[in-house]
Length: 389
Image (cartoon, rainbow, N blue to C red; front, side):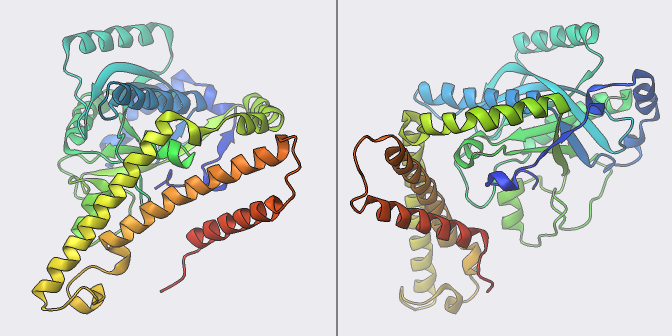
């Protein structure tokens, strides 16, 4: 998936061009009238998202997490509408220029906007956009604030999401307004310091995608794995590549801010000590414990059926999944992810202490810091370059 990167160097880079901000209304109207997407279920392959739209979606998704946790419950899903247009210069591309949060929240894999107040709000928003903007409301977004998974994010369409997307497409696509869905994983975004979002469009009921093809185009024959990553409707929608754009002037300003001020933010902020972060770490550790208990119970049950003990490897018991796909492997990956995040936080704190402490800290502490830094880099390299089986 486009947004699975966890390192800054792997994150999608913003493309600098003024063309994405300029709209030739006459040409875009020709694109809308042609309705090429009505003859090709996979017509759109790419989405260009503005930095403002991306930032507003992530901030809205994060506010839903805070609202749910502050009320003593689980993080809440949020929903909003997207503004944009089908590109006239770049075929198969949709452009998202702005977003508008909606007063909608929900739980788990369902976000439903059937409240009368919400409907009236959307009508007023549509009327306002029609008068003040050249673009149209061309999509919707919502969040999946589920537990952080080390293997993949939670950007997928549930059965309810798919039904909502199909309703939008059936209503808007024939009228020259191809509709888009974006899903954000806010908890993983903040845990991994990367923008975890994905864009989707639904297949019409008459379309037949290739057998075993997942939304990202990969072929996966194991049903459990497909459902885990993409949900039960994995073969009824497809993913579009997400890219970002900004103007040359905005890029110059951001480069100056990063060069001049980003180091100050890094040294002044301590995310690991924030209450919300510490609470989430506790929840993630509890989830790892549950996974380990589940793996232990499954291993014990399988061993008893085979008449063996707990010492047999999973492969020798026969019929079980490989080690890479086992529940034990998932628990191990989750624990490693939490440990690496904690190690990075501690390393940052040690760096601050060495930089700002008035005491002389050279009595063995420099060596300790060097060892910690070396171990962190070693583990990071090992995770990014797994040993071939």
